[in-house]
Length: 340
Image (cartoon, rainbow, N blue to C red; front, side, top):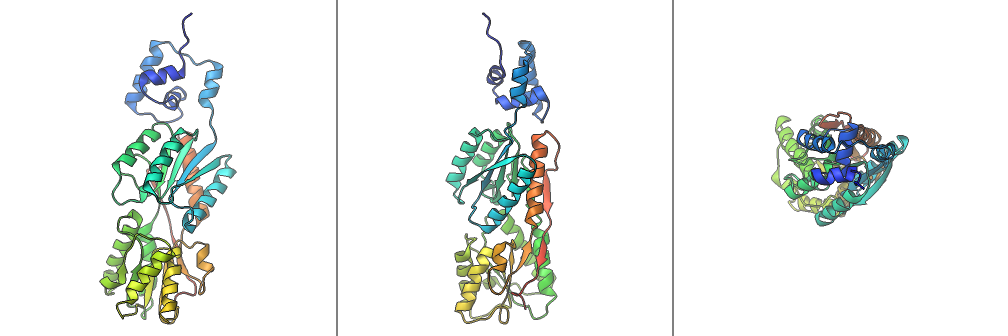
């Protein structure tokens, strides 16, 4: 008896995934022209017509979206994941969370694991997409995955067609520097923490330098301290370095709320007062900003809207609809007691 041709047989002969064949059969999502032509030729060759059961399997979605976070212990990622989860549940989707702990090797392993899961889309929160210089091997892996399912990222991955959903970091630093420039007593401005190898941080740091010049404020190299930490220890180390120069800045911009906690610890240990001696402004406006005393002035991203944007566009891509290549989340400065 002649063996019936299946979707799996067509995928194997075409050298593509089963889901790619399914996308051609249903027309639900974009497939590259070359792959689409090759698949259609094989379909015609065998006069393939999926039966009712096969059509049901083709159209079946798991209603599961995979999220790989850089480090869920960071309040920024935990807040963003919770907002994504709420947005997904409201739309009938569940999320499965993977955490790389900012370990590149683990991130590679998890990408392999996620690729084997039956998820309808993959979302990368930080990690490799945050690198200033794209890891080409990682980008190649993502390209393979994106042949089968949509991939959305916060950050960028050169050489891929991932949809990017990013904070408008230029606007974020502009809000900070506009506030500082409007207070004449804030003349010496320090920037604590963050790595020059991180894409979003490099934007913030570049804007910081440019806007100091624009507002007629002096750039003091000793006040611009980088490290590879985005936690309280990183902020503590950076602030200790700044204060070791025997000159006290009027205001410190911390790379995030987590680092700002370490900045505050260092300032207190040096017997200086916040905000009387030093004002502090940070980024992310997580729950930390109102747990510390004084409460932190911080840049907010409206996490609920952020999560809604990520999930809404993930589902649009799952449904084969067009979305812009990049969407920007607009920041807002929340003024609290850490600024005089």
